[in-house]
Amino acid sequence: MSEIWFWVTLGAATAQMLRFMLQKILRTATLSTAGSTFARFIYSSPIVILIAIFYGIQSGQSLPALEPGFWVYAMTGGLCQILATMCVVALFTQRNFAVGITFKKTEVLLAAIIGFVVLGEAITLWALFAILIGLAGVLLLSDPPQATGPVAARLFNRASGLGLASGVMFGISGVAYRGASTGLDSGDAFLRAIVTLACVTTFQTVIMAIWLAWRERGEITRVLAAWRVAGLVGITSMIGSIGWFVAFTLQTVALVKAVGQIELLLSLMAGWLVFGEVISRREWQGLVLIGCSIVMLMLVT
Image 1: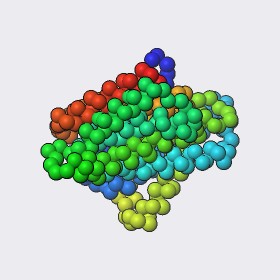
Image 2: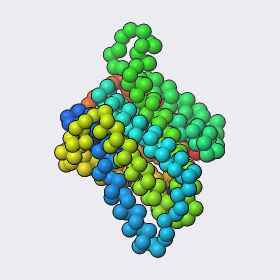
Image 3: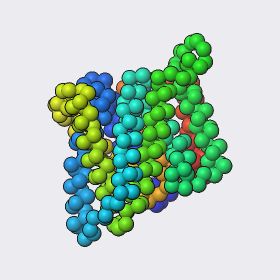
Image 4: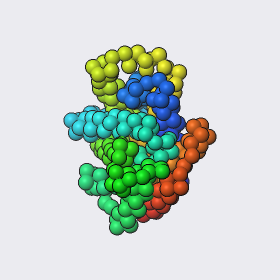
């Protein structure tokens, strides 16, 4: 566990937790779901582009050629990440912060399957067993606290749908980003990761700007007006994204996301210390099951 990708992943998970915490503040107090999602791209993409150019010059490396296959992976990952982030931000209005992050973390239970289908990264029987344990935890978390009525209505609700959708989309985006960065024909791991990130965030900024101009007039102005918090969203997003992209370039998506589950503990601490939230006993049970799944995935992948 002393390899660099491990420590990079820990840093990325910490930055991502801070970013989601800031987005929760933006969503509940200032911006729409799409607006708070846009904030992470508009404030980070220019900095990422500058970092990519500066690093290429300073390291004496030429930028890698961007083949059509690269753009297929990059744009697929970018679109899925936008949809996943919007699902998570919308989820914050349904459930508390820690459980919202836990729903998002279904991505680690799905990344192994998606990685196998798309990139041929194998799944062991023990990994499959770990996934099933995690899914049991997700079912517990999808049952709202103090819920009454038919079980189906309690398990299959807006919160569970948003959470599972975000997990699927984040799982696809992670695999797509690994496919894009590892498919570049030149450059060291950091250069390939930062170039991929620069292309993806630029694409995401343009797509989100077009959407907001069409569907939510005035929201771009509100994002710019909320620059104090929105700017921090962009900075933490940039730090986290660089970490994730470097880790994806160095290691398989399933293992990176398994280590990234440290974000669960960090989100619990943030929900308790910052938002004053209380986790119910059933939710704790779900968290424990997912935690066991995470540990197993770390051991067997």
